[in-house]
Image (tube, rainbow, N blue to C red; front, side, top):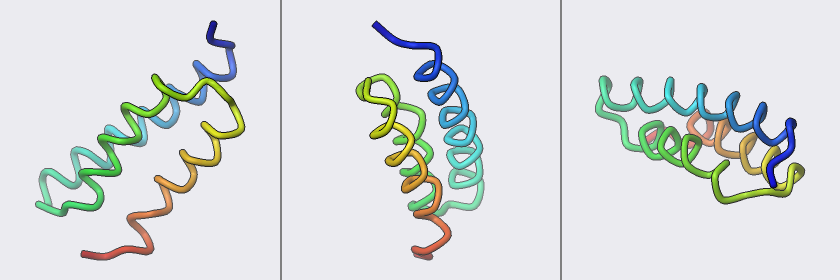
Length: 68
C-alpha cells in the first residue's frame, strides 16, 4: 500500500527524471539519460520513504558530479 508521501515523492522524482531524460537524449549524454530513466522507474519498486528520498537525491546529484 502506497502512502501519500510516497506518491508525492514519486511524482517529484519522476518529473525531474523526465527532465534529465529529455536533456540527456537531446545532448546525447549517457549519465543524465540513465539517471532520468532510473528516476522515472525507481519509485515503483521502493516503498520505504526514507530510502526513496535518499536514493532520489543521490540520483539527482549524480549527473552534476560525473561528467562523461
